[in-house]
Length: 164
Image (cartoon, rainbow, N blue to C red):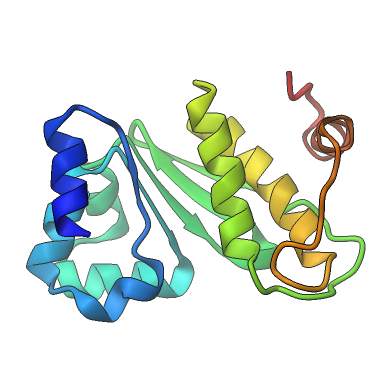
């Protein structure tokens, strides 16, 4: 992971650092390297606590070293740290709570799509929240397939603006 992150950084390729299940594998010093090289960092609230504990940085301190820091908080939405601002992105209400397995991955998929399209970090996180809502409504980690029209309609309903 360190070699890949360093290679992306050296090549000038922006990337998202998402430690996820690898939290136990790295030291505070190694996490600081990832943060230094990454364009964005995304963690859930538990991982955020561990990252701060291991690096000795606060969330604001981490955010100051990347273009954006996203802390996901499940049904409470996400907190976005970017450009010295903290923005709350509301969770999209789920129609039912079927299975949380894969919600983090679904969120990351929406986030990466938005960033890849050149959208703002906040808009990318709003799309991520929409995709996360679709995921939690379906059993299994990848058993959902909303259409682009459905995603755009749900985004507009949740956030009062057009997706495209």
